[in-house]
Length: 204
Image (tube, rainbow, N blue to C red; front, side, top):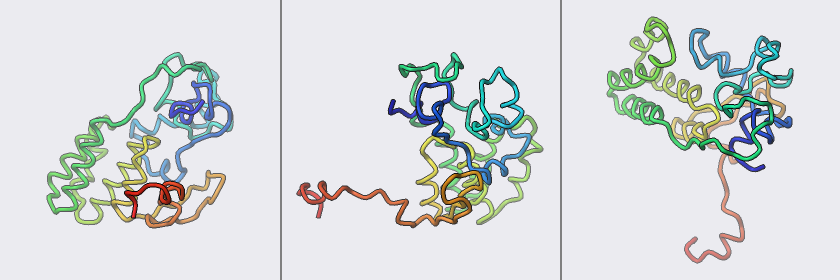
């Protein structure tokens, strides 16, 4: 089954369920505050030990509470009935925060960022630190929160490139663990197939 749900949801009969696990980067997960509601979206050992979740030891840090078929039966959704997520209103808020921070409208940037964080924390004290951020520190925080907020929603690549950032592969990854990959790495450029280049008269 070739589908986004198949890639991300253990309650869908496809890759994630069958063993091709897509887990959050350990380093990124560690940066999520314990009081952030988004942290509970990812499977911990306690979640695995709770049999009601139908998790296995290899499911550590998969997003089992972020995207899931409502029936919550491991491998149960064979025909995709759930909606695809293309864009959430939260993305517009985060893009507004990023843009404002980069043009120097820092108070507007902070306001937008806090509007998102207010939905993720029970106490405003948990994100009051945003008011102290300026310059690159503010931009970096918005980028971090973008990575956390939109994990597995297809937004990280363009955010990485917009911010000219580096990403460090987590220790929990099977391949390239710990490797630093810059935004301009050739592996992050999707190449046009040779046949398209040769046969498309509009490509020069």
